[in-house]
Image (tube, rainbow, N blue to C red; front, top):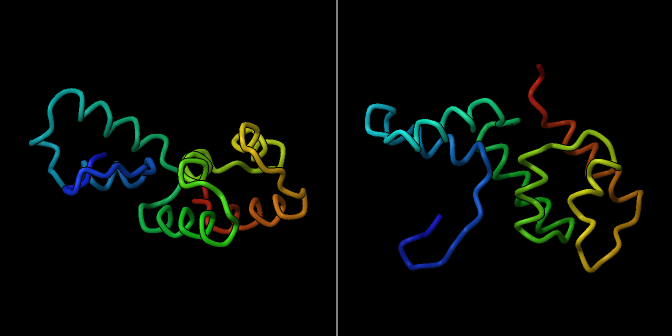
Length: 112
């Protein structure tokens, strides 16, 4: 998504959902309505929680923003799932730190 200054920023699914809802469904074109339907089905947390999770993963856990966004979009439940998002990275993260990240995500997961 482009900002006014031309810089790009990664958005989580819940943030996209909030943005599209703020436009009003009656103002959305067909593609935007399909996107809203998709993000409504697959968002695992609300937009505010998603933003906080991404911020923590970047600032405190040293992840890249793009990695953090994908992790929040999918909300892995176990370390093995989390490793999938970090496999292409240039750094190795200790299992104990990954366990802390998974526990943190589990604390913020929507109950189904």
